[in-house]
Image (tube, rainbow, N blue to C red; front, side):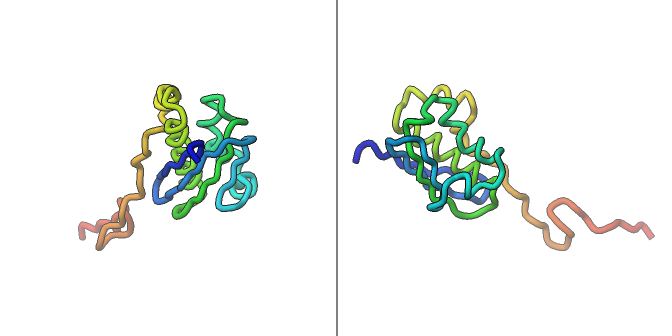
Length: 129
């Protein structure tokens, strides 16, 4: 069971638990094939990015369990999880992934709404008189 690599990836409010198993390169997200789970090709590309960058595309099967957030955040969380799991599987890949910025947890979050106002930044119209 040493050839199974687990990692957690996060983005916005999404959390992805990722398992990397030796295999033909199938990516499953929440028990569905990736093509079925992510509707846009750009999101599928985001998920594949760490595998393509490290030339590991056909070597691992990816099983991801993702929760919270929207489609874009979930894709980013899965990408982060895959990147972390790849580093656990082979430490020599760290440099390539770090240079591409795939090991950094993206800190950008939605700003909270402030009380007495319309939104996070929007204010009610100011009237002098």
